[in-house]
Length: 144
Image 1 (cartoon, rainbow, N blue to C red):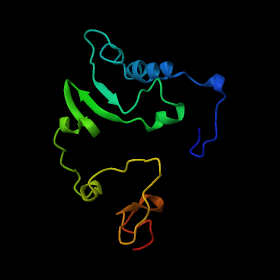
Image 2 (cartoon, one colour):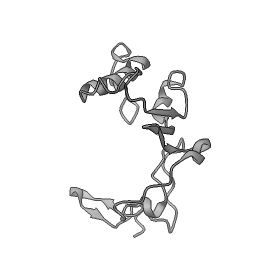
Image 3 (cartoon, one colour):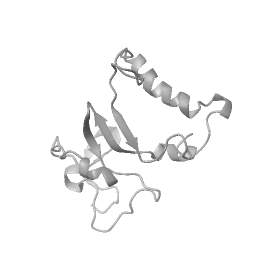
């Protein structure tokens, strides 16, 4: 679908969830020529793990894009944890480069059901990329 919700393919051209997951995992390993190391759950292969916020196989199709990892384990170590698992989270890495907005706002934007946060008087959103890819200190809210 487009961002506006227009369907681009007939249902007969769409993959089912199992096939989409297989192509993302095993297919991704094949594309990078690493199918001997990863892509399927087999003895001797890497087995990194992500626990998702909902069951991929049972949630409504339009909710799949909102799935998030609540725990991610790489090489046997928790590298990310949120929500009820946040006590398992490793300490945050230092922000680099140090001019990134996340250093000042504390987190990255998270999409919510209500859409983007409203513009609040006195709250500015930091540097933007303007026309031609140049940086600007103007705020999208027009208050600067």
